[in-house]
Amino acid sequence: MRTRRRISPLAVVRLVLVLLGALSLLASTVLAQDVEPSTGRHVVVLPTNGIVDQIMSEYLRAGIARAISDGAVAVVIELDTPGGSLEATREIVQSELSAEVPVMVWVGPAGARAASAGTFLTLAAHVASMAPATNIGAATPISSDGPDIPDDLGAKVMNDTIATITSIAEERDRPVEWAISTVEDAASYTVDEALAAGAIDIKAESIEDLLAQADGMTVNVAGKAVTLETAGAEVERLGMNPFQSFLHLLSDPNIAFILFTLGFYGIFFELQNPNYVTGILGAFALI
View 1 (tube, rainbow, N blue to C red):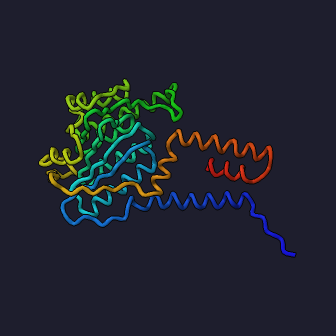
View 2 (cartoon, rainbow, N blue to C red):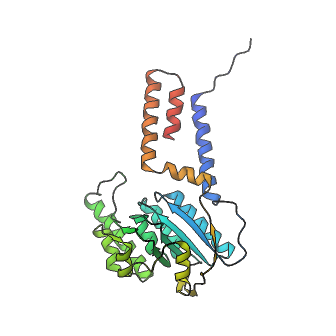
View 3 (cartoon, rainbow, N blue to C red):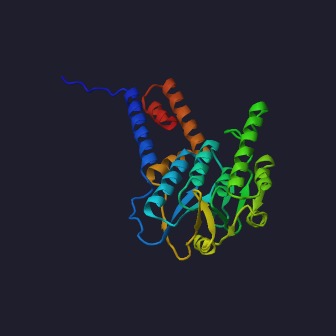
């Protein structure tokens, strides 16, 4: 008589870990979409919204690299973010500052924001722009769960963040005191206030409007003066691939909290009434 072999719950969890590892690897190596590169004069637009995390960092790094290899005349980061990881922010800023192609940030569309980490990303661009009815600032560092960082650690993080935004402002010839105020005083500014202060270069209704206004500007790209030729350029949009989009969604604190709660109760009910189902589902949610 043949007996059915029972699959160990631990084996299932191990399989899930392997699959998620492969998913992460794909997200870090596969660019947004498999599109034919443009052969004419074009700009690459990278729609970027949500929490600033490692997935966003890798997506923008790969997007900028793709634009360089395709011979794009510029990259436009279409930004709308509430902020996020300071470490991921530093990585994105490094990609912008070292880019061998002009990088423009457009905070848009109307109603979007470049809050917290988004302030650093905007100031680090060769050309910083915002749509009407947008805002920027409130870049004071806080702990991952919301409160201020206390005592000496808080002072160290604050001083380090001020030094970072100061160096960005100096590199891009933007007002240093204005930049510091977004960190030290958590100041937030409208598009008109940022434009009047010289923190951004252009107020643009759309990406096409940005390209028209930026045409003829001279920027310093990797130590070389480059005159932008963006008016009338073809726009090529490269969004995140499905793997990146999925992992980026999971980085949302609200989604993470829901999954953590489901995972906790799934394992709790498994311990109370062993059945493999709730335990495995709970492990999936936690992973």
